Image 1: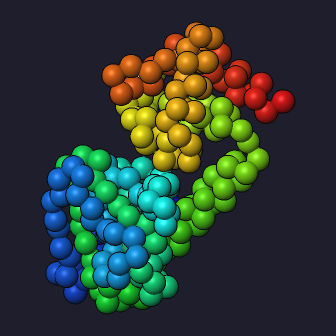
Image 2: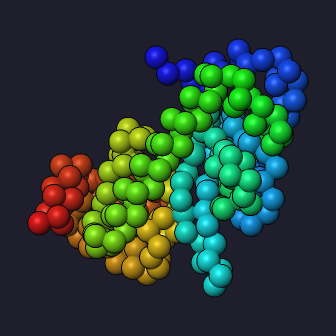
Image 3: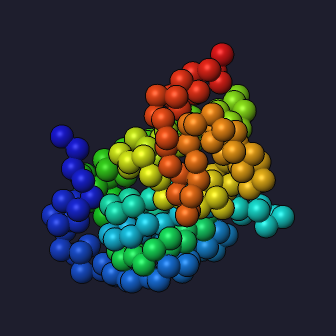
Length: 215
């Protein structure tokens, strides 16, 4: 049975635990900046973060939106590389930070933790390959519908709080293009966008739309 990160924290060696740093961040703060030296492993305890990469032209490309018990920094610390993405707080949050040397030692002496990291890295790689394939093979409307269905599956709600800016970053598309798709799906009585939320009008139609777009 896989252990979750909170159990691993609770039972980690005392020599590791005493090096933990817990910090609070405000909405909009950047805990990690792309290109800067990786100094800490991070565990999000409370709140929501977005992880994104910025092109040389200044365009942001969303990689992940994460919640409590998710981690970041493990890839860079394991490879002694600078942070590959920026991590920004979407809400006030609390983060547990582990200095680089302590993180490396933790991996070496705690099997439960090292297996947790391996599983996380594998899961992230799988998701990244899947997303990259979708970006190449499918049109924007399909990717938008797929995103909405994924968010519905995660939140279990017909009302999904997400800004158009975040949708734009995730799909690497202009807000104008996003609006065009939303208006089309609204005319078909599938979904609408109000007050910063996607509202699913007919879930079955939305699922059928995904299938149709693959044909």
